[in-house]
Length: 460
Image 1 (tube, rainbow, N blue to C red):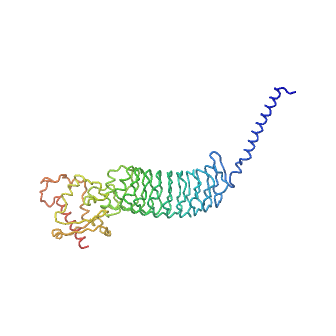
Image 2 (cartoon, one colour):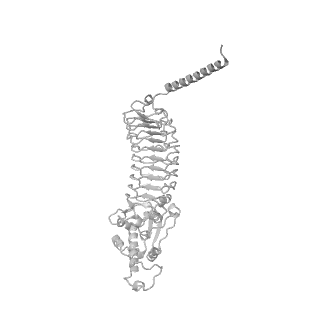
Image 3 (tube, one colour):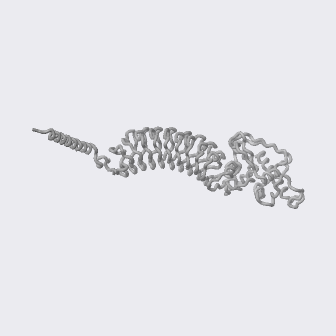
């Protein structure tokens, strides 16, 4: 007959055996239900744990391999022969996806939409990827770095980067882009670095960089840029590095750089800079800027060829017309030194010559003698009308070389020693009517110059 103690002992033993058996069964189920690493890793690929990495590089894959574990954090598919990326190609959630150096020719809209956690996507070095569909990157709202360098892209759809709010680094260098559409980057409010060098871009429109309020580096060198809208950089207040060297820029509106108030590194060398009156806004900006800059060698006019635009003198721009107050270029006031103002006041034309400058957004180039003998005439959209006075018409024509030979150094003490509006009669020890007076010589030279200019404009 069993005692109560024996009964309790048997019950405890049964319970203990049941728990042990259940635990063993759970372990077996987990072991059988979870595939081994060798079974989870796709064929011809190598897998590494912590973080889960699947490396399928250089295996001649023509499509994305199947069987990539869904929890893979990094998937490397570079150096294969993958040709197309379609919707459903990526049945896994990953943070880093490398697809560079393949043969990708087409990316279907929404191809990456299942990769909601993707942070880095590298599509570089796909030379057959010449175009992209507008929704190619739809759903990648966590993407931080996008590489599309050396793909021979010729154009970018206007909605290509829509809702990529987290993007910080965008690599588009060494493609064949000719044009960037307005508001192309408007959703990239967190973009820090934009690489566009090595393309064929010709113009930068007013709204091309709108929305890039946090951009720090903009690389546009080795393009064909010849025109920059004066408001193209108006949202780039945090820009610190701007590379525009090796382009086709002859001039740059002063407003362009005034909008980049935080600029620290500026490279503008390798451009055919024109250093006439059109260079005045850029020259004035450099006077007040503290920036690490490259040289800006002048290509024209011929007397200034090879000179550095940054180091021209006030006297070089003393005869330039004031900017139109109705334009952005006229929003600042130009102030010349006392020496320059004195020279200009003492040597302005004394005749009744009348000049009418029609309103234009471009700087008026009213001095063709700056071109030199062998340079073609400068053609502008501004019409200049002169009525030649009798006094000027009777004066001989001044040779341009003679003008520049007599163009005095601003710091030289031989011609500009008197800084007041009126000099004493015995200035430089010469009688006021002496023909050898430097001031009188400069006055005669200026009058001859004015006649030459007016004759040229009147008779072509």
